[in-house]
Amino acid sequence: MEDAATAQLLGGSELNHLNETHRLANLGYWTRTSAAGRGIGTAAARLTAQFGMLELDLRRIEIVVAVGNRAGQRVAEKAGATCEGVLRHRLRMGDVSVDARMYSLLPADLLAPP
Image: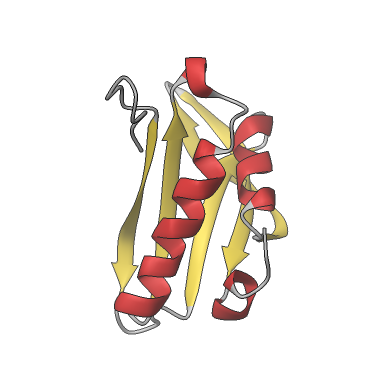
């Protein structure tokens, strides 16, 4: 996403690890620190998830966020995702394995307002 006034990139999102057999993908997102708290991550996540559901016919989108990343968890929650639990040692951060929360979005989740 870009700031229309300055053309500065404020954040972005992507679908990765596409699994065509099970119709699912992983959703990743980021927001520039100077743009945090403005709803950019949430908007990007929802738009990307909608694209995945409508254009790629996905039935499930997963969001994996490190337990210590509260901002990332809030984006998932504000985007309408459901937390399904904590996955032990799911992510590597440098040389350390860390626990992560698993969130999911289903097509019905995107029908509700964020």
